[in-house]
Length: 452
Ligand SMILES: NC(=O)C1=CN([C@@H]2O[C@H](COP(=O)(O)OP(=O)(O)OC[C@H]3O[C@@H](n4cnc5c(N)ncnc54)[C@H](OP(=O)(O)O)[C@@H]3O)[C@@H](O)[C@H]2O)C=CC1
Ligand SMILES: O=C(O)CCC(=O)C(=O)O
Image (cartoon, rainbow, N blue to C red; front, side, top):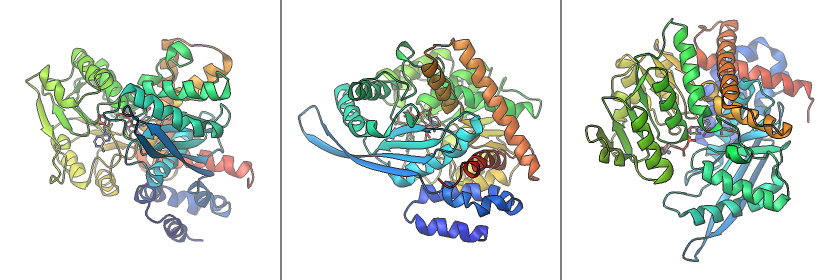
């Protein structure tokens, strides 16, 4: 069957799933030369099998709010691919969560987890629950009821969830506590746990730190570094905060931070003290990023507007851009603004933050551009390190884990450039490099394990 026919079949089988189709479409261009050169991948129908989850789980989550009113949400787990290890990937709590979003995230996770070189299959899950404005008690009740169903599908050798948007340290604690109660066992079944009870040093920081380690590798191909570079960062959550922390450590200057209401532009740069304020606003007060102005009135705040067809954050002149909020936050116009302002490098902290048309703008330009599959893989890599420590009953030092994270990001960078070159693309085409390197690793494992 031709590659075009394979793709049109996948589209027909998954109607009304635009994000999932977008994520599949994005890898096809990279994989076409691989599928054409290596007939074995077509013979074993690898693409068809990679795009069909091994198992889809959907369940009802009832919970009581503080006024005693009952609410009903929908919980999910997409167990995507277990060729390289147990299903592994985060949980997202956000009102937009549905099968299309979770399948795109799980599909990307397959390639990302393969790139880490760790024994990790792929998955993703979550609920259409909105944690905003909920009390700690309401969050706890929701997490407990969510786990009342999910626990039967999990296990340290079966499926190991973690955090994602709306699921941070607080939620991981409630989820783990309920799992322990239901199974009567203290096992490494969730990652991102507190270091005081089974978590790993550096897991909280890993995605943001890993992103910046990867960006440093990209810059080093031009004999350059982050020193003195102006950086645009979107998001104000886990990934954005620790990307900003590492940019500062590497001598760069973060200029922006955002949430779903708007963004802050601080021309003087966000330093360590300002970052502490951001962390307090978002992690403790659970407030809005606009509150930054109450501490630093020289900064500017731009409120999101429904009628704007581009995001002015991406029209600020800078050297590097790190989208760390959510999918499709950079459209074609934003990508053109970045390129026209001579941005050097874009590395994704978020999963699929650039629309298909935006990706094309970057691919047609000279900018260095890395997709999340490669550049945000540090989070899941340290999750794997957390799983290893849990199985061995050990707790490794912060320095040891950080060093391993750095090595993994260096290796992913090397593997991407090698795969891109092998198939005739420019060495620094990280899009094709990541897709090909991730695909071939998982595809060979699927062939070797037979038609299970
Ligand atoms: N946590 C991890 O280890 C990993 C996360 N990722 C990806 O990184 C991204 C961020 O995740 P993480 O930092 O963990 O999540 P958090 O929930 O900690 O933070 C998300 C941030 O993005 C903002 N945001 C969410 N949705 C939107 C939206 N529709 N428009 C604008 N801003 C939005 C949030 O704003 P507000 O505060 O208003 O909600 C918040 O500032 C996601 O794409 C995630 O899949 C990738 C790899 C690993
Ligand atoms: O740490 C993990 O298991 C998953 C992190 C994640 O969800 C991601 O990489 O997108």
